[in-house]
Length: 182
Image (cartoon, rainbow, N blue to C red; front, side, top):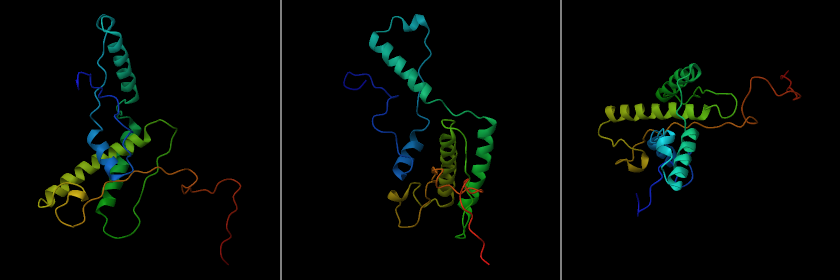
């Protein structure tokens, strides 16, 4: 309770964190596993609650359904294996050559973004732990709190690619093919 009012941990106090900024990404990584689902109640337990508590419990149940955990499906495990390998390989690459990426496709609201962000956050935790182990004199934090002006690891950056800007292996139907040079 805060000032005599019940706290509502399942309701965001502001907008959802913008995962495309460093601060938003860090906030999401810290809080991504902090959601507590609504407790299961039978009619006997739900009946005597006050109207306010019933409304809050139903709101918490709705929030629980909107924040279902990711499941280890065969596809998510395959994506995790591929993406973890790519991220680790790219993180260790020294040359300034292009880094291999991964493009996920599928219907809307199937968990692609959440799956990729969870994989990237898990990699970041391992990477920062490794960085702290190998470079124990540096503070295990992001650039704003480093004690020296040395470069620090950057967070992974999952991004969305609008279909109109994504490279495809085939040109869109009806588009003109450029002629090869003579």
